[in-house]
Image (cartoon, rainbow, N blue to C red; front, side, top):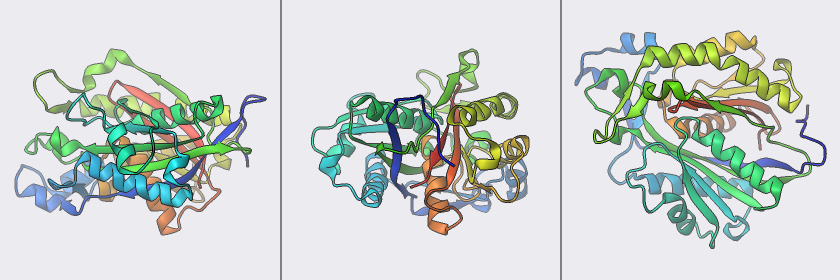
Length: 321
């Protein structure tokens, strides 16, 4: 099955994926030692068994470079063939300078267009669309898209409503031109009336989340976005080989899977169980894990959906590299 684009539009596709997971594993039992929680409580509500927390030396830059380097190697391109770098993150410490140019420099990419993008947990999908559109428009030949987070920097480690959920890591994709479209038209948007559902209020440096409100929004409002993404790409649920929504909560993943009618033949990403919610990094982390395990294979058609702070959302159909 192929993706459909408007007549005359050039295509773009993912050429390679890469991921970086911090060394430190933190189990639910570990968290129970420092807060009022337990393994059953966490798994029942969000389905997370463990997550990765970055150590001091695993900075946003280090993790982004590691994931980006792997994606670049997987793509078969040399650094000088990349002319656009987009870094998606919701946990940047400093507004200036951006990390995108630093990551490009560390990877030996000479003088690319480079910038950071913050669309919360939808950041990777937003960045992927910007990259694909730039390639279709002729503004770039090849692009590196990185989603990277150190959410442990912005979460109160004693607050079980957030500390049990959010984690750290990086995932990346190299995007290039293609005769056969491999990235479908994006279905995206925002519900800004719910901006305070996930926020780091000015002067606090700490994330808060209205978990139940976000859960209701994700499970009732975003199915239509997934359907729109499939319709725009000219495919249906029966054509989807891999479903990889943002890894926010296993219950949300399962609810979306059921609403779309995916059966056992569709591979569903459940990376959240081992990785927690890594915001803008979660989708490339999940796709890389599925490719490395053999559950997903090159040429598979994947449906992805990022959603989160803003509230923002974006869905696309992708051909896996």
